[in-house]
Length: 352
Image 1 (cartoon, helix red, strand yellow):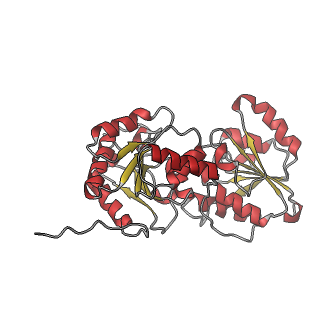
Image 2 (tube, one colour):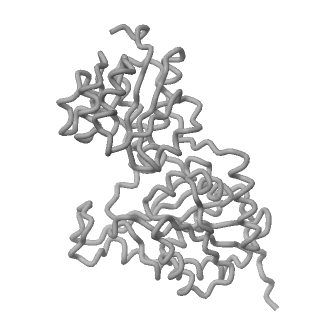
Image 3 (tube, one colour):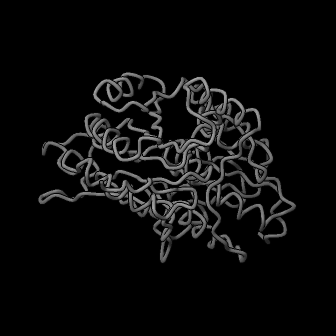
């Protein structure tokens, strides 16, 4: 099929929040290369919030697992010319295979490659996942390749709500706010609450005018509460309950830097322009942060006998993350502080 004949495109990335965000740059590249084509995006809740205000997407289709057969017929009825499956799991591969599209594209390095008649190769691709997805598009014959960062589009209402919530916490307008996102669905990605509490005490002892805001999501409040109870810091606050990803994004945008496990909040912070310091366990940090960007850094400890196992359970006491000390993270945190334009070092006390 000639590229000029491609009028309707469907991009599939059903989940997770971070993965959907990391697909947005590829959608932007598609939009620039097919400016007259309709681009739709198939995604599940709650990750659909990432896509709903994206100007490069014409229609956001919210997939429901309980109606999978309906979605097969719905996609076929739409008569897409090109379907791109970035998720490439059994469900998304079947949707692609039965889509009726002339071009069914997906990665050639997964077990679902059987579903595609155009297999996108990973050879010489970027390590950063957002840029990797763009590199995969080269197989489609796209010539205008560029590498934008993920973007999360907020409303003025979201930002006003964030300002109001910060004032309720008695955080002054313009305060230097450090965000913590200490949660993860995977235990082996979760830096201990005790370490976050100690880090908050170290930060606020040296920088008493800073404020720290601990974020949490559904079922995670106890984690934030525990950090608060273990810390002696005065300006440590538990973030309010946020009812949408856009409100989370707006609140993170008010923060100067986020210290976080590798989770969805870290990707949202990057997408709204907040600097990030990721705490990595078995992860490859280069996959989840923009390359060579001092605004987005990671710290990782690799003890002996640990081998990036990627397991959700650990029989070695999770040394790779437990033994990463608050002092080591603080040292990296201070390195990043000195690179910030809006950072002002504390006044030097005169010795008497």
